[in-house]
Image (cartoon, rainbow, N blue to C red; front, side, top):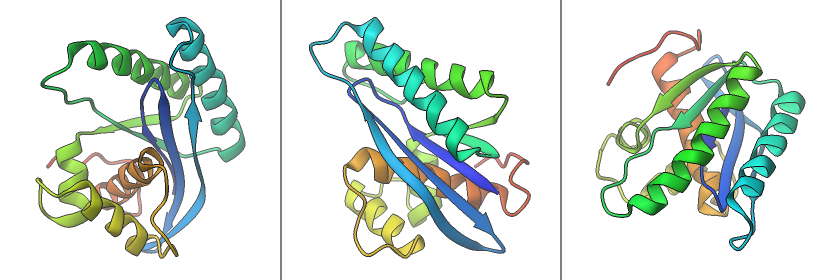
Length: 165
C-alpha cells in the first residue's frame, strides 16, 4: 500500500509518501510545498493545488492520509490553514484517491502510545520507524510522514478499512 501523508498549511504544506508492505516501511518521497507569506491567499492556494496535483500524478498513492485541524487559540490561523486543508482534500478527491483523516492526538497515540507526546518524540519515532539517518526537516515533512505511518498502523496491510481510536 502506498500512502501519501499530508500536513496542510498555507506557508508550508508537508507531504510524505511511504510504502507499507508485510509490516515494513519504505519512504518513496517527501517534501514541502512553500508559499510566500506576503503573497495573495488565492495565489498561495492555487500553488498548493497545482503542486499537490503533480505529486499525486507522480507518486500514484493508494490513499491519502491528512491531518484534521485542531486549534484552540488563533482563529485567523485556523481559517487560513483550513483553506489549505480544503485544497488538499479537493485535489485528493479529484484524483479519486481514498481519503483518511487523523487528529494530532491520533498521530501521537499511533507513534508513541501517548496522546500528549512532544513534537520531538514524534519526530524521533518517524526517524526510527522509517529507519532514516536523521529526522526529516522541516517539521512539516516529518509530520506528513507521521500521518502516513498512522494510517499504516490503523489500517494494516489492507490499507482501506478505517479504524477508530
